[in-house]
Structure formats: C-alpha cells, structure tokens
Amino acid sequence: MLITLPRVLDADDLRAARAALAGAPWDDGRDSAGAQAAQVKHNQQLPHDCVAAIDVRQRVLRGLDRHPQFLMAALPKRVFAPRVNRYSGATNHYGNHVDNAIRFAPDSGQRVRTDLSCTVFLSDPRDYNGGELVVQEPNGGERIKLAAGDAVLYPGTHVHQVLPVTRGERLACFFWVESMVRSHEQRRLLYEMDLALMQLRTRHGESAETVALTGTYHNLLRMWADT
Image 1 (tube, rainbow, N blue to C red):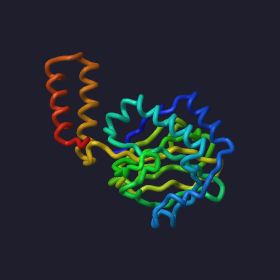
Image 2 (spheres, one colour):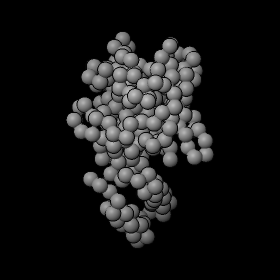
Image 3 (cartoon, helix red, strand yellow):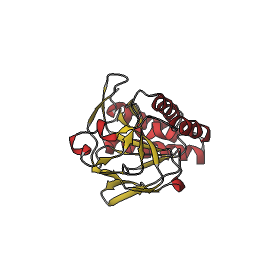
Image 4 (cartoon, rainbow, N blue to C red):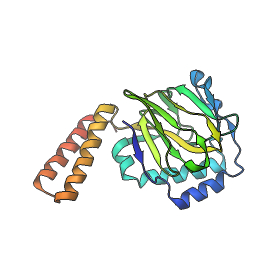
C-alpha cells in the first residue's frame, strides 16, 4: 500500500530547507548503502551530522508530528533519523534494490526495523526531468513524482528505484519507520478502519455505532501493537 502524505513541509519550511542546502557538503551516496545496493546507487547524500542535514531533519520530523495521516498510516514506534539526498549530473539514479531490514540510528544508538520507507520531495517537479521513484507493486511498477513538501509512504519490503534525472536536480529527504504493528496487512486494515470512522463521524456525527467501532479499532490495535 502506497500512501501520499500532502504538505509534510509547508512553503516556509521548504524555503528554509532549500536555503540550508545551498552550498551544503555532499558526499557519495554509496557510503551508507549495503553491498548489493552500493552496486546500483549513484547519488549524493549529506553527512548525517552537518548543519544542513540537521536543519532539514528537524523540519521533517516536526512536519510528521503534526501530520495525522502519517500517524494513522505508520503507527510509528521508531523513526530513523531522516537523511537528505541529491540526484543530478553524473550521480543521477538509483537502480532496483530493497532497503536493509535493520538500520542503525547514529543519533539514538537504536536499531530500527524498516517496516516502512518514506520519501519527502524537496524539489519542485517542474525543476527537473526524470527522477521518478518507482515502487514495485503486485500489479506493476508505481511511478511517483510529487510536489515539493509532499511525501510518499510505502512498505520497506518492496523493490524500488529512482529513475535517472536528465535535467536539473532532485532533492529529497528519506527515512524509515519501525511500526508498532509489524504486519503490513494488519496495519492496512487499521488504517482503512480509521479512515472509515473519520468519514462516518463527518457524515453522521458521533453515535453509539461509531463509539463501538472505535472500541473495536483500539482492541485490534491493543492485540497487534508492540510498544
């Protein structure tokens, strides 16, 4: 299940993030890749502890904290500290790969299971050609190229790639989420139930039925969640 998260970053955050990235010290993106991924990874990343990376990371984390759809869909237990990458020039693509199942978070010292992957787009799609994120779904590859500030959330188990950027540069923030609910199927059921409950309340207001269904939602979450 792919979920688009609109406006994780607002216009002010985007302007500040782009200003922070101007003149930032880019490294070879392969430095953080596993053995298989490093063979197909051709991009650049910011050092984890540089000023620009910290600025963008903090803005993205604040945006996620105030984004109800992210909380509903991911049910986050741990979030790997977001990183920033760039695709342009000769370092302009990332071939098919699967993310490592476990990531070591340098800021917290914790290991994070990568149940979900997330990309927050920082560049206006009109400013570059190509650069679509392609996620392999059962019915074929899904191409994703979103407005600046929007994000996409997708299962960490899926093969995915970033197509070559043939004009301009593609800036993005990426990270992984360990969910309280490990199963993608269970997490999807909870998300769909939560959405349906919101729609029922909007259409009919609070009722004995919505209270009962809310109880069922939380009982399922209590049964499936690991905190």
